[in-house]
Length: 105
Image 1 (cartoon, rainbow, N blue to C red):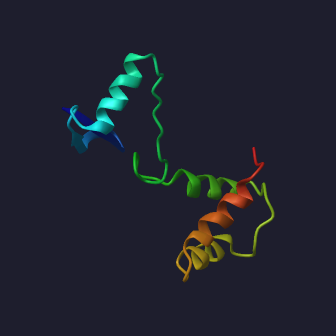
Image 2: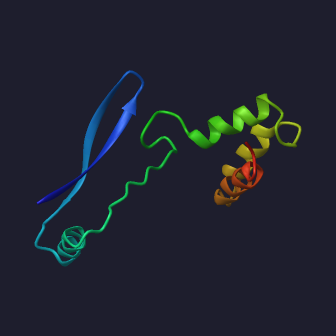
């Protein structure tokens, strides 16, 4: 049995939470084990939006951009961002945030 575990970092400590198990006998697991046996190099990908730690890295970087005046922004950038994110099409807010961050240091 393979157990997939995610670690959530919380301030000064951490806890692990199992997010699922899968049998090594399943086709999906068997193909993964076969790939590893044949020399595949597994990778880990981490989502940095309040999943692994208690902040959203994108929004924290947005505040950094505002504080350091690194990009041209609307008069009240947080209000504008929240109006998009909490509007009828939330992905529009995330897309806007990603676009203003493009090419920033």
